[in-house]
Length: 207
Image (cartoon, rainbow, N blue to C red):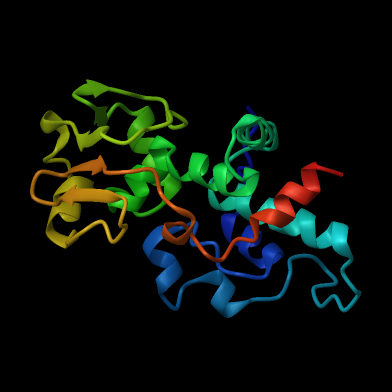
């Protein structure tokens, strides 16, 4: 799968909103979007009217970039959501939220989804007691996620233990002292990010 290896702050500027792709830096004055919120490119200030297709495209791109998925992978996930019995847009968001890399991020064990993906691929994360190195793995209620005991003294995890207070997400449970978490239930729509208009994504793929 191809990955966008360019500056992630450029993606925030392109979407016109902070996507929080660089972890703690996004909350400081060093955030590039705060210093330069205009779109990238020579002709940064664009005043042309955006049509329905443009709105749908931008919403799809924003969701894909926030969850750090390539186009083909995102399209496959949409098709899976479409085959389900739930509302397609809500089901898509739920599938995204239940990805292992997103859950590690939501628990606060990583400062960004990119860092969560790195922790997983490097073998630092265990699911139900077994090492799992697949960031896209779909979790289900009852699954336990933990930093492997033999890796818990590495610097990133020692710092996390000192700063973690709680997952801050209703459908997750966190034990900060043990660096473990659990998926309590599949998230409802009101428990998932409200800054997405998933219906526009459905309309984009339904053209």
